[in-house]
Image 1 (cartoon, rainbow, N blue to C red):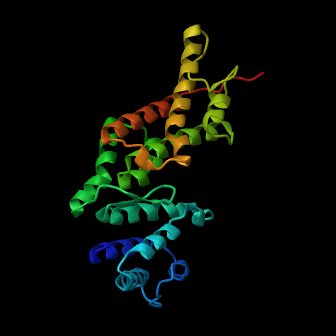
Image 2 (spheres, rainbow, N blue to C red):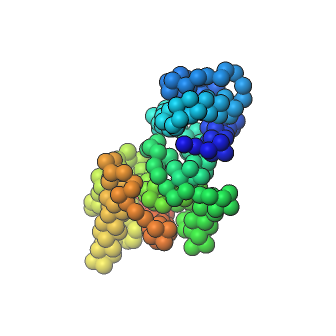
Length: 263
């Protein structure tokens, strides 16, 4: 079960004035999860009281976890996508003390439990600090900021990989994804984006190799997550830093790429 401190932190994140749930959403979620609604009061206190009553009455945290799952379903924020990541980042810092994290897909997963506030803060900031020391591309940091706050290595890499596809779509106007996007953007004669003049055999080989590199990164860190849980992809902090540095390299090459004239 959750301790009182953990419940307060979780309720505080979900009921945060700036990034948390709205009052109407809280009422609906409490009803959906068949909890007793304590009525109108500050959002965090309303959530905390509903959580505490449910856990005390049932002697388990099942409905609390259900509330979190319902609250963090990505589809719920399809019209307000800017709300999702700030709330998830705040919630994950609170959940760290219970050894839990909400994934990008809105699923609750187990992680190493934080035991002190400095430890939780260290886990939230250490990876980002190391990447900044490496001079990692700003676009990598911008897209994976929320994941780094949770210190969730696999999903940090996954989020950064998404930024590669996003940049290619912005540069070309395409809407494809994955290998199809890579083939259309970096393949063909001429490609939509070229990383060099392609005037020699070596340069054309470099272009082809770069396309294969990007496609391989997409295959490793995007496709599996549709059907495999994160626990099947153990990743150390060192591996994450190396992989995010590779993503940074791809970003830099895309930044300097050119659009050959098409006849």
